[in-house]
Each structure stands twice: as C-alpha cells, then as structure tokens.
Length: 159
Image (cartoon, rainbow, N blue to C red; front, side, top):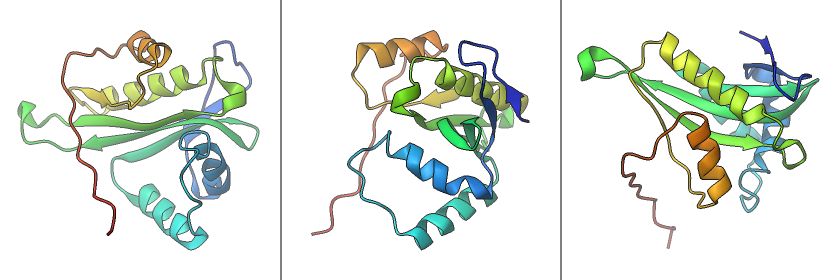
C-alpha cells in the first residue's frame, strides 16, 4: 500500500506502520503531545504490538527515509446500523514541527479516508481539541464538516 506522494513534499512515502517503526513513531508523537511523560519502553512495545494486531486499526505513516515525519491513525468500526456499514475514526494526526505546511498530513488523511471508503464505511469522523483557526480550516479543506456536536469524558486523575 506504499505510495509516493505527489504534492509539494515529493520525497516521502506513505504506508501502514510496521513493527520496526516504533522508535521513529514515538519520536514523532513528541510533536503531538509535548507534555506527555515518556512511556516505559516495554509498555510501548506491548501497545504497539496490540495496535498492529488489532483488526481494523491502521497507523499510516509518512516517511522520509526511515524518519516518520507525519502520521494518522485510522480505526474502522463494525456497525449494526446503516445496513451494517462500518464507520471510521481518525485520531492522532501529527506532523513533525520542522515538516509542517508541506502537505504530509493532507496526504495521510486522504489515504485514511480512501481506505475507509474502500472498506465501505459510511462516514469518517475526526475530533480535534485545537481551537486554532488554521487547524480547523485545514480539516475543513480536507473535506470534513463541523455539522455535529462532539462530547467526551475523560477518566478522572487517580486520587
């Protein structure tokens, strides 16, 4: 499923993440949540193995050589409504701070959405915590609309 990019950043490849990509993905994720504490390496390996084995879950990664410069996670979820059509969720959209504004994330989102359509999903959802107008405009320019209300609940901190 690897594909060469055709936009402004012509020297990258998009493909599903593989077992050897964990170190470069962990480095990339530092650009998503700067305040996250480092994960124990054994736990990271276990979580990544579970992700790779999870049916319907794919981390798409954009690589320059062996360096992950951008990624998105796509989860396809089976469904009992919509005549059994699955739906999809995109999460963890991140691009390395030094590689932003070059089309990497857009190419990854296009790949994830195309994959969802290939798997007969009836919709693709994406939530963002960002209030930045440029970020919201980016998602709108990728084809997403803000026509639903999102809610979330987070686990309380251990007391």
